[in-house]
Length: 104
Ligand code: FES
Image (cartoon, rainbow, N blue to C red; front, side):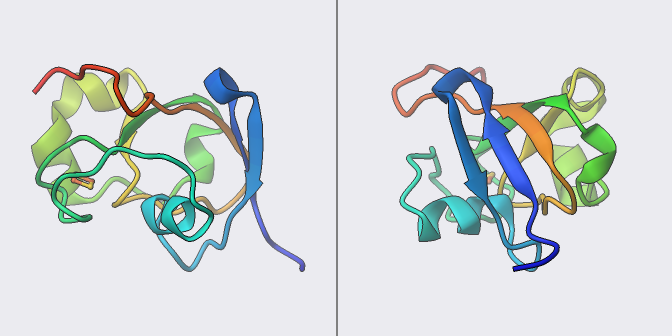
């Protein structure tokens, strides 16, 4: 299918094709990719965060709720929320493992 971005999850050596109409979190859930979430996609828990290694501008713009949850420092370091982000073109990311401890 045309215009289906590919997301390379570098720390899992896994490439998935995503639908840009859905958030990355929903793409992961639909494809049974293990991802942390406590709030179910409301930008409240921060558990779905991931770090962009390449292709930062290939994501949908940072939303106010995402900025409020992560803060400017993490955003500047390449972190985003899967539940608030849509991949518009190919990118390379790092997605924390299910049991990985995250800062609040
Ligand atoms: S799923 Fe809770 S912040 Fe994204």
